[in-house]
Image (cartoon, rainbow, N blue to C red; front, side):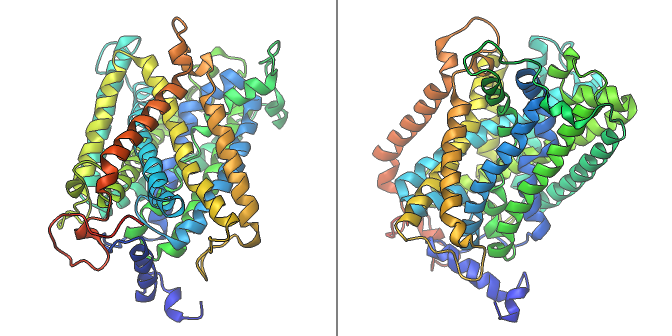
Length: 524
């Protein structure tokens, strides 16, 4: 790295390396490089979204693990850090749109790549709907004006959630359709507000501390009398942390639209994950230290919303909740953006129906517009299912997170095989794990398998929390993922596989304009 041009983020030398990396995968660069360091960092941290995840799931952790569930936060961080470090090496070498799909394809072959991409795309569309539902948890607590339907209880809450969620998805669809620059500006501004609000919240909660840090050892006696004791309760409560700390790969999925992504994407991935761990962990800790009544039933029902309002008062509490609304909005924007890049990446390999249309980049907005609209419509469609079947929806939402963990495994497991065969070499002068690469990769794979199993375990508390018990709900993870994986792969094998190949208009060396069609070059 003695070339002085290499130190300039927007230099032609850097663009040359990153464009060569894209060409190695068989593509020509088409998306405009406009995103800087903070933009890529913001994309990763807004997907994780500290305020969205902690405010949405704190109640679940407390209800099932008591205050001691806090230890699941550093546990999940360490596991996901192993995955993120593997992703950093890949992002340095292949900073490409739809990163999880392209990495799994490059490391494991086209079949593994398609399955990993399919799982990630399906999970992203369900996650889009799940995040949109968070509006219902927060907005009506700010003002009853946001409760358009009924009084916010029972069926009216579900119906109002669909209305609010549809408004949010419509907004993110329009923003993403109008180009990455607009998305990046809104996302960066929202993340800046979220980070400032999170730090201020930590300070305010710290000022109201009423007990010592020993509270994080309190289990509330949960799990007693069961086979696994508190360990079983802790594993259930750990889902509250596992549901939050993912999506950091979004920073690399915008690689084709970023300046010097080979250097910036690995940094953005690590910064997003570490910042989320530190800030989120402190929010959870000081919430437990400051809440007036640690044994209040509202703590395991209303969660952090109750802590904020009861500790900081109505006025300050509502300001914080408005910041949570902003966090939910930019989180939704990041989820939608990641889904669009993934759909675009699969489509330009002719790996989705109507691929030539889905992979078309708007000459005016310089972004794939059709995937934004299609993913938005699917997200709204899934919301509509929630109106009459909220329990089924909660099952599918939980499963979406498992599918993301499995999609990550579709990258880390083939990467481990390549390391063991001596076929993996990090790009020179960029992020590298060096001699730690193999042990980190092994831990990433073990973590992926372990947490996927924990997430999918047929617990009534997760998959059949209310109403009569049904075996198909308890085993919903295995059933739904089996249908998605086997059904999707069957379609790919008998239909899409025969068409796979980089579309001619997107192939490396192709002119800027051309008619859609499949090139003779097979998918790498």
